[in-house]
Length: 163
Image (cartoon, rainbow, N blue to C red; front, side, top):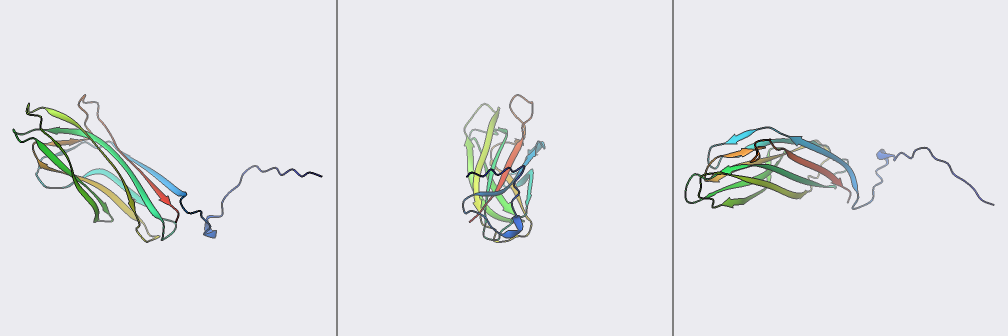
């Protein structure tokens, strides 16, 4: 004797609290093509992405995958450098001096910046992640501006990982 089960759709009961550790529970994508010109030294500027996310479980890990593009201009023989940082609901959770160059032609140099970050916010309330850049030496930085002047975009994907 055999049986056949026909199903048109299976919907999870998200209110049950059942989840499998290591699996993605929810995901959101964010994009910004804001044009930002950073001229001040050591002043962090928001690159235009605000990732607002409400975790379903307080013990979940959140993985943020971020990438962006821009231009950096040399202002002298020492080259230039910048720093990047990530804020969660206004508090810095990660920061790094990460990009430098030694182009001596006073030309605009393409720059790409990206990172992956794992966070445990320990909440089921809304959290907002913002990415900031600062020029630490050298000339100006232009965010979301590529060398061919067609523009670029900053992109982020935020994933909640069950524990």
